Length: 112
Image 1: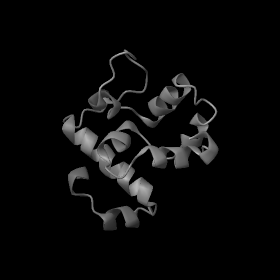
Image 2: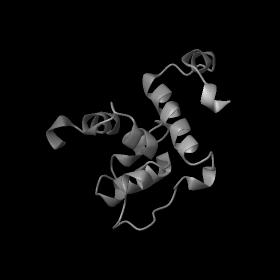
Image 3: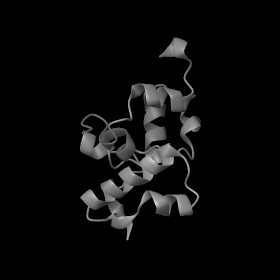
């Protein structure tokens, strides 16, 4: 069912934000790549020294917020709560970049 979800389906579910559309699309992609095994998702840190893009793609929103805390961006981490930003979006979405993350975190331009 998830494999066949359309933009019209998302709109009928009242998902209007482009960011949330992309978030759902990339989340489905991560699940598909992992045979729809939700146990692949990473909510807690593992080995911080050898993080691969494939592992980052499995990060939940909570894990992304934990990572922000570990890289001295703790003051901005709460800005991602409920945002739909997860590792799959950060790694797999070509339009997601550093500027997008800074904007979502509300980091002032003087600090980027």
